[in-house]
Structures are given as C-alpha cells and as structure tokens.
Length: 319
Image (tube, rainbow, N blue to C red):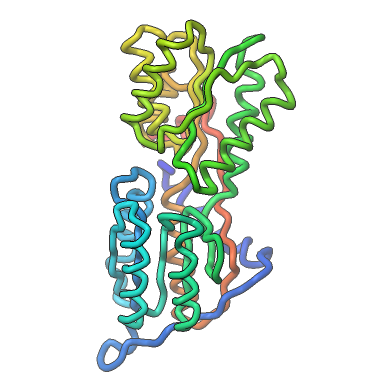
C-alpha cells in the first residue's frame, strides 16, 4: 500500500480477474442530459468518514478521479447510520446517477437500497463489504485469507503453551467475522497448546482497543500474543502495553499495513500486519466505472489480493 509498485499491479490484477470471474454486469444508468451528456455521474455513499480505512479508500479514490473530466462524483457520509445511508442512496436514484458506490453501513440492512437501484437500472459497486443481497459488483478482499495469514505467522512464532487475546472488529460485518474465524480455526488445528484468554470487540477503534487492552492487562498476568482485526486496534493495544511496561515479548498482529503499523514492525513494536490495499480498492472502483461508462461488461467480483507484512518484507511497504 505504501509503494507505487503495489498500485501499478492493480491493472494487471483486475485484468486477470476479469477473465476468471463468473458473473458480469453491463453498463447502465441514464446519461446526464444537455451539455453534460458525456459526464458519468456517480454517487459515493460512504459508511463512516471517522473510520480510518473507509476514509482512506474514499480519499484515495477521490484523488484518482477528481481530475478526470469524464466523471462527476458526489460523496456522502452516513456516519455509520444505516437509515442515513439508505436516504443517500434514494437521493442518488432520484438524481439519476449513472452508478452508485456504497460502503455498506450494514451488509443486510443495505439490501433494500441496492434493490431500489437495481430496479432503476443503476449499477451498484459494493466496496470493502459485500452486500447481503441485491445485484452489485463487489470490490474488496477475501477476508478469511487475512485471518489465515495472521494464524500462519502465529503458529510459527508463538512459544509453547502461549496465552493470547483476540480483538474483534465491528460486529455484523463479513470482514470482522471472516478474519476472526480464519485466524481462530486455523490456529486451533495447528496449535492446540495455545490458550485464547479473551475474544472481544473493540469496533476497529484505536481508543477502544487501548481500553480493552488495559482491562486485559489487569485480568491476565501472562499475554504472549494480541491478534487484532485491524491496525488501529493493534496500535491501541500496543500503547496500553507500553504504558503498563508489558509490551516486551508480546507478538501483536493487525490488518491494513498502515504507515504507523509498518513503522512499528520495523521498530519491533508489532510483529506483523496484513496488507489490505486502499489504493488497489480505489483503483478497482475507478476501473469499473470506466468500463461501465464505456458500456462494457464487468465481472461481479474484483478480489484484491492480501499480503502478510513482517520484518522480512516491511521495507517494501514503508514510505
């Protein structure tokens, strides 16, 4: 995520996926009238601008497309309010947008909005999370793989009879659920000696991650590993451990490969993270929109590859 090299592979990755994916969508929506006939109008319904990764994807996409005269994008922020996001989608439909991008505030609750767009003939791109229904183009990760990558690292790195804690992401989302199950199921099969002391949510939030880790420090005299659903929670946990002078020898894992997390891996504060590339997800949106505008068919799934980032390769992802 930190290097131009990662961004450049987006076109290659997406081109390969186009051949492999099963279902396809054709370009749809109504072109704007009058002098703006060639402008492709897009509504971008963000879940929550306060969320680090969701905001990063949105900002990266905006930087990519803002100077392209062929597109006009209207951004909204639901602030994690499902009804607000459904209202935003209704407004985009009423405005006759040519396409709608949505980061679902709720994967099941968003379905009526997507189905309304389907009936209006407007293509929908669901980014980061899959929708629970309706027809949409998914751009994101296979989140189970991220949890498996964390487990594969910990299987090798944790000491015998280790005691660990697991910090879940926001409940109700596929990325939270699948990362957790990918990690715990894989670890259990290979390391029956490892004890999971606690398994709770900190909602992908750094401050909540720090508070939850403070509670765990008080409750458990031995913690050998802290596995987190994203880097923000991992960094909050690291901060709590440092304050308590309990950070030495604790293996901390996150997801996203943020700049700060990669710096901590370099310094030894974190053990590993998993690259979930905001530039590749943003590039996927941009590429799909260009295909839709051209009236081309596009695959239903654009799966962005993930990469484990450790001390051995972290320099590739540092600015």
